Image (cartoon, one colour):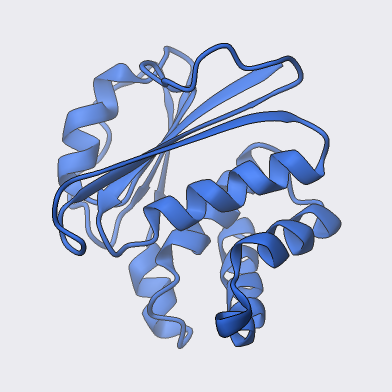
Length: 176
């Protein structure tokens, strides 16, 4: 089984971090993975996207043109990538920042008020991981061991104090 995921938003929203987390989670669960970041010239505020492939077989190409799952963290991302999702695919979007519904009827869409939930729960920088938690629940990938191991790989020693906040964000998303 192969799942192709595209995560997109503004730079600084944690798009690449979320993708890297998903890739490491796949690795620690003995899957074949690919993680391909893409971002504009601006360090913060420019466009950023990340392609992640998680598979039981070797990944031939890291390019995700037609994702099974789209995570859109802003309106330009939803506008740009909505039509590329495969029929029967999944679109998760931050309904705190995106003021329209998904137009397609051949996909399953989840409106997740991630930014609002992050602010309301005192973790304002972790809307990305709330969406990540919802994504994991949609994929049936909520193994605590895998989540802890992956977070251990992507959270630097300098930010080790963020482990509990990231776990809280993932749980908030998973519970939606």
